[in-house]
Image 1 (tube, helix red, strand yellow):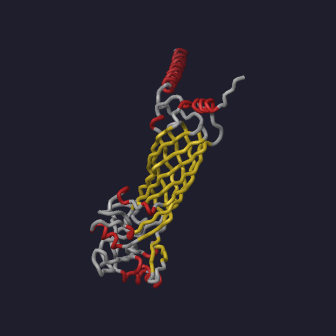
Image 2: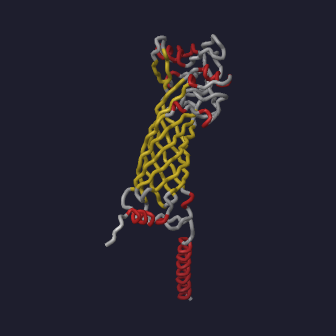
Image 3: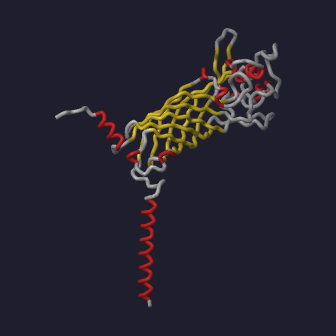
Length: 333
């Protein structure tokens, strides 16, 4: 009896193993296989224009979000480098580091009516370097159901989303009577009362923040080793202080309480630079007057060109072989 039980157990294990192999073979025959094959690594550079979306600047009409309120004259250049790994042809992970520069100015707003005149009368400005690093996943939806990795199309649209960290440090300007402009770091000046006991709801903001990069792009595979991409990369942030403008004006006398005499002198002048456009003669706003819109966080986005190189050995695909054969010189002997 014991022998029969042992034979039965052995038979059950063999049947289980056979069933597992059949399932694995069947799974490999399906689309969207998760087999990784040979891991492919890539490195490259990217550059392109960056645009800031915040409280300062804008165009005619009521201030809005995204394209309508872009000031193209303040376009800045982003540049960076990245490495990526692709376990298969439709999925990858990217790590990148980038530098860019953003700027906003109220005095360049186009004016057609009263809505934009209030922002122009505010007359604030800022500029800031931005250093960022992020990780993101890339997904190529048109490649997900292609079984043959040697016959992939050269043009490959993709989407990406990830998480990152960025560092900024806004500066504002003061222009004296002689027309000389100087720039001063705004964070130490507490321009909206950050950290002051009189304004308990206004907390100091950190100059290092997290963001969520997301975007769309199209990749063109020149050869199995070289590729180029055109990409829209938008960064959602969780701070409204990239431009140091968010809430309301404060009592300027408090600068003397919380800052050094030198800082207080600069803060008084730089936190409120009102010019009398809508209300002639006014040069200061009362404490509590709206200064920015705290309901919308600042953001920025880039239009980038990426150029990548596959690292290590690469296998020549059928499209590459066809292209090489078409470029071959004809011979008659």
